[in-house]
Image (cartoon, helix red, strand yellow):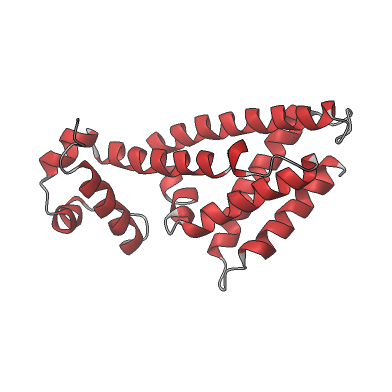
Length: 191
Protein backbone atom coordinates (compact mmCIF):
# COMPACT_ATOMS: atom_id res chain seq x y z
CA UNK A 1 0.00 0.00 0.00
CA UNK A 2 1.49 3.37 -1.06
CA UNK A 3 1.84 6.14 1.48
CA UNK A 4 1.22 9.81 0.84
CA UNK A 5 4.47 11.73 0.51
CA UNK A 6 5.74 12.75 3.92
CA UNK A 7 5.19 16.45 4.53
CA UNK A 8 3.04 17.21 1.48
CA UNK A 9 -0.24 17.34 3.39
CA UNK A 10 1.50 19.06 6.29
CA UNK A 11 2.71 21.80 3.93
CA UNK A 12 -0.74 22.19 2.36
CA UNK A 13 -2.40 22.57 5.76
CA UNK A 14 0.28 24.99 6.97
CA UNK A 15 -0.01 27.05 3.79
CA UNK A 16 -3.80 27.26 4.09
CA UNK A 17 -3.42 28.44 7.69
CA UNK A 18 -0.72 30.93 6.70
CA UNK A 19 -2.82 32.30 3.85
CA UNK A 20 -5.69 32.92 6.27
CA UNK A 21 -3.40 34.42 8.89
CA UNK A 22 -1.60 36.74 6.47
CA UNK A 23 -4.54 37.71 4.22
CA UNK A 24 -3.40 35.76 1.17
CA UNK A 25 0.38 35.98 1.45
CA UNK A 26 2.69 33.03 2.01
CA UNK A 27 6.02 33.97 3.57
CA UNK A 28 8.45 31.05 3.30
CA UNK A 29 9.91 31.62 6.77
CA UNK A 30 6.46 31.69 8.33
CA UNK A 31 5.53 28.56 6.37
CA UNK A 32 8.66 26.78 7.63
CA UNK A 33 7.79 27.69 11.22
CA UNK A 34 4.14 26.73 10.88
CA UNK A 35 4.81 23.41 9.13
CA UNK A 36 7.99 22.43 10.93
CA UNK A 37 9.48 21.53 7.55
CA UNK A 38 12.31 22.99 5.52
CA UNK A 39 12.11 25.09 2.39
CA UNK A 40 13.59 22.06 0.65
CA UNK A 41 10.43 20.10 1.46
CA UNK A 42 8.36 22.77 -0.24
CA UNK A 43 10.49 22.59 -3.38
CA UNK A 44 10.53 18.79 -3.28
CA UNK A 45 6.74 18.49 -3.17
CA UNK A 46 5.62 21.55 -5.15
CA UNK A 47 8.61 22.87 -7.09
CA UNK A 48 8.01 26.44 -5.94
CA UNK A 49 5.79 28.64 -3.83
CA UNK A 50 3.61 29.11 -6.93
CA UNK A 51 3.34 25.32 -7.20
CA UNK A 52 2.08 25.20 -3.62
CA UNK A 53 -0.58 27.84 -4.41
CA UNK A 54 -1.59 25.88 -7.50
CA UNK A 55 -1.99 22.71 -5.39
CA UNK A 56 -4.19 24.60 -2.92
CA UNK A 57 -6.32 25.96 -5.77
CA UNK A 58 -6.56 22.53 -7.41
CA UNK A 59 -7.88 21.07 -4.15
CA UNK A 60 -10.41 23.88 -3.85
CA UNK A 61 -11.53 23.45 -7.46
CA UNK A 62 -11.83 19.67 -7.16
CA UNK A 63 -14.02 20.15 -4.10
CA UNK A 64 -16.21 22.62 -5.97
CA UNK A 65 -16.68 20.29 -8.93
CA UNK A 66 -17.64 17.48 -6.52
CA UNK A 67 -20.04 19.76 -4.62
CA UNK A 68 -22.00 20.71 -7.75
CA UNK A 69 -21.84 17.35 -9.56
CA UNK A 70 -25.04 15.80 -10.90
CA UNK A 71 -25.04 13.14 -8.18
CA UNK A 72 -25.36 15.85 -5.49
CA UNK A 73 -28.68 17.19 -6.72
CA UNK A 74 -32.13 15.58 -6.81
CA UNK A 75 -32.65 13.22 -9.73
CA UNK A 76 -36.33 14.12 -9.91
CA UNK A 77 -37.98 17.43 -10.61
CA UNK A 78 -37.86 20.11 -13.22
CA UNK A 79 -34.67 21.57 -14.63
CA UNK A 80 -35.21 24.64 -12.46
CA UNK A 81 -35.63 22.64 -9.25
CA UNK A 82 -32.45 20.70 -9.94
CA UNK A 83 -30.43 23.76 -10.88
CA UNK A 84 -31.59 25.76 -7.88
CA UNK A 85 -30.29 22.86 -5.75
CA UNK A 86 -26.98 23.00 -7.65
CA UNK A 87 -26.81 26.77 -7.03
CA UNK A 88 -27.36 26.11 -3.32
CA UNK A 89 -24.49 23.59 -3.31
CA UNK A 90 -22.27 26.11 -5.11
CA UNK A 91 -22.98 28.77 -2.51
CA UNK A 92 -22.69 26.39 0.46
CA UNK A 93 -19.32 25.10 -0.75
CA UNK A 94 -17.87 28.59 -0.98
CA UNK A 95 -19.31 29.70 2.34
CA UNK A 96 -17.87 26.62 4.07
CA UNK A 97 -14.29 27.12 2.84
CA UNK A 98 -12.52 29.81 4.87
CA UNK A 99 -10.08 30.36 1.99
CA UNK A 100 -12.76 30.89 -0.66
CA UNK A 101 -12.75 34.68 -0.44
CA UNK A 102 -8.96 34.81 -0.81
CA UNK A 103 -8.94 32.19 -3.58
CA UNK A 104 -11.49 34.17 -5.58
CA UNK A 105 -9.75 37.47 -4.99
CA UNK A 106 -6.07 37.85 -4.14
CA UNK A 107 -4.76 34.35 -4.83
CA UNK A 108 -6.47 34.09 -8.21
CA UNK A 109 -4.28 37.00 -9.35
CA UNK A 110 -1.11 34.90 -9.07
CA UNK A 111 -0.19 34.10 -12.72
CA UNK A 112 0.01 30.32 -12.28
CA UNK A 113 -3.30 30.24 -10.38
CA UNK A 114 -4.97 32.63 -12.85
CA UNK A 115 -4.08 30.31 -15.72
CA UNK A 116 -5.42 27.31 -13.82
CA UNK A 117 -8.59 29.18 -12.86
CA UNK A 118 -9.22 30.25 -16.46
CA UNK A 119 -9.14 26.61 -17.56
CA UNK A 120 -11.36 25.49 -14.66
CA UNK A 121 -13.91 28.23 -15.33
CA UNK A 122 -13.88 27.36 -19.03
CA UNK A 123 -14.77 23.75 -18.21
CA UNK A 124 -17.57 24.84 -15.84
CA UNK A 125 -18.92 27.22 -18.51
CA UNK A 126 -18.94 24.37 -21.04
CA UNK A 127 -20.82 22.18 -18.55
CA UNK A 128 -23.31 24.98 -17.86
CA UNK A 129 -23.94 25.47 -21.59
CA UNK A 130 -24.50 21.74 -22.06
CA UNK A 131 -26.81 21.72 -19.07
CA UNK A 132 -28.82 24.61 -20.54
CA UNK A 133 -29.08 22.65 -23.80
CA UNK A 134 -30.54 19.72 -21.82
CA UNK A 135 -33.14 22.09 -20.37
CA UNK A 136 -33.89 23.31 -23.89
CA UNK A 137 -34.26 19.77 -25.21
CA UNK A 138 -36.77 19.08 -22.42
CA UNK A 139 -38.71 22.21 -23.39
CA UNK A 140 -38.04 23.92 -20.05
CA UNK A 141 -35.81 26.68 -21.46
CA UNK A 142 -36.55 28.64 -24.60
CA UNK A 143 -34.65 27.50 -27.69
CA UNK A 144 -34.03 31.21 -28.37
CA UNK A 145 -31.53 31.32 -25.48
CA UNK A 146 -27.92 31.10 -26.67
CA UNK A 147 -26.71 28.31 -24.37
CA UNK A 148 -23.01 29.15 -24.72
CA UNK A 149 -23.52 32.84 -23.99
CA UNK A 150 -25.95 32.16 -21.15
CA UNK A 151 -23.59 29.60 -19.59
CA UNK A 152 -20.70 32.08 -19.68
CA UNK A 153 -22.79 34.91 -18.24
CA UNK A 154 -24.27 32.76 -15.49
CA UNK A 155 -20.94 31.26 -14.39
CA UNK A 156 -19.31 34.70 -14.45
CA UNK A 157 -22.14 36.12 -12.36
CA UNK A 158 -21.94 33.22 -9.91
CA UNK A 159 -18.18 33.50 -9.51
CA UNK A 160 -18.13 37.26 -9.00
CA UNK A 161 -21.41 37.35 -7.08
CA UNK A 162 -20.07 34.81 -4.59
CA UNK A 163 -16.83 36.77 -4.23
CA UNK A 164 -18.85 39.88 -3.34
CA UNK A 165 -21.06 38.04 -0.88
CA UNK A 166 -18.07 36.47 0.86
CA UNK A 167 -16.60 39.92 1.44
CA UNK A 168 -19.70 41.40 3.02
CA UNK A 169 -19.88 42.14 6.72
CA UNK A 170 -22.13 40.77 7.94
CA UNK A 171 -22.10 37.98 5.42
CA UNK A 172 -25.58 37.09 4.15
CA UNK A 173 -26.86 33.58 4.78
CA UNK A 174 -26.43 30.72 2.37
CA UNK A 175 -30.19 30.73 1.71
CA UNK A 176 -30.36 34.47 1.05
CA UNK A 177 -27.40 34.29 -1.31
CA UNK A 178 -28.82 31.23 -3.08
CA UNK A 179 -32.20 32.96 -3.50
CA UNK A 180 -30.60 36.09 -4.95
CA UNK A 181 -28.32 34.21 -7.33
CA UNK A 182 -31.09 31.85 -8.40
CA UNK A 183 -33.41 34.81 -9.11
CA UNK A 184 -30.74 36.18 -11.47
CA UNK A 185 -30.24 32.81 -13.20
CA UNK A 186 -33.98 32.19 -13.55
CA UNK A 187 -34.52 35.67 -15.01
CA UNK A 188 -31.59 35.29 -17.41
CA UNK A 189 -33.05 32.03 -18.73
CA UNK A 190 -36.67 33.20 -18.74
CA UNK A 191 -37.81 30.59 -16.24
